[in-house]
Image 1 (cartoon, rainbow, N blue to C red):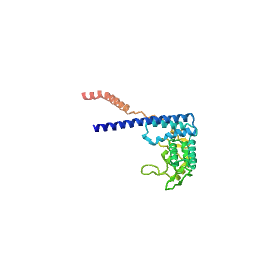
Image 2 (spheres, helix red, strand yellow):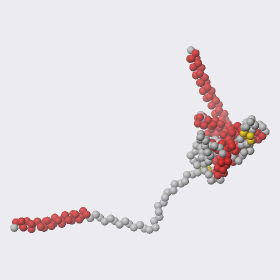
Image 3 (tube, rainbow, N blue to C red):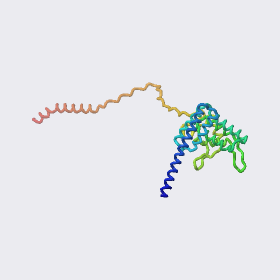
Image 4 (cartoon, rainbow, N blue to C red):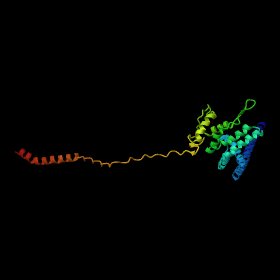
Amino acid sequence: MIKLGTATFVLLLFVGLALGAEDLTKEWRANAEQKLGEARSDPSQANVMAAAAYLAVAERGEAMEPDHREVVAAITETIRSVNDYPRHFNDELLNLREANTRRELGDYNFARQRVFFQMQQFRDVVMLELLIELLDDSQDFFDLPGGADLLGNDTLAGSAICEMIEDLPLPRNKYGYYTLDVAALKGWGRDVLDGSRSFRFKGDPRKFTIHGPVEPPARVVKASPVLTTIPREPTPAAPNRTPALILAMVVLLAAVAALLAPRICKANRG
């Protein structure tokens, strides 16, 4: 009886957790869709960033539930449709810097890391352009007491670029992740901004430049050479006369035999 009671309790516990998780997912979706609707009707910085906050669930990657994937796709699509949308993220970083100066933030690093994580979900050239520009922003870096570092925006932007771009000129560690080198990324970024270097976003097979997707080269069809002289008609091959000659010889021999046959007969009688 005790074992049965324990098993029943465990089963009910799992069922309760499952139902609770389902309720949380529904609540999350309802809240996310509300913020998404507000961003659509009024794409102000406050509304855009409130909707972008729900992109944090994308950190689960492949483990995201279908509901989460659907909402994340809708949020990124809506924000991307806002004219010059990266400026809202840049302004948010500036607001966080001011708030930190006034000592109004509990964790400046975490607040900015959250914004950069949201930025790396937008794998397009306009967001990449902003991140490349932020590679020159090292203003916030300094050593904190206790050996901790307050990361500069250049480091956080470099980390975001590493999550977005497939073919960076950076070494990888044994786990396949890029080893961040901000100086090397700055050189790469200059080439990208002047249009001399192409790149690929992760998950997209197309090549891009800062101007957009690179069209594949048109297939070149080799033209037939232009004739400068009139070709001569080929000389017809001489007909094969061998069968006719054999037939003529057979006829000739038959005629000779017919002519000589009477004489041979007379000679034999004589």
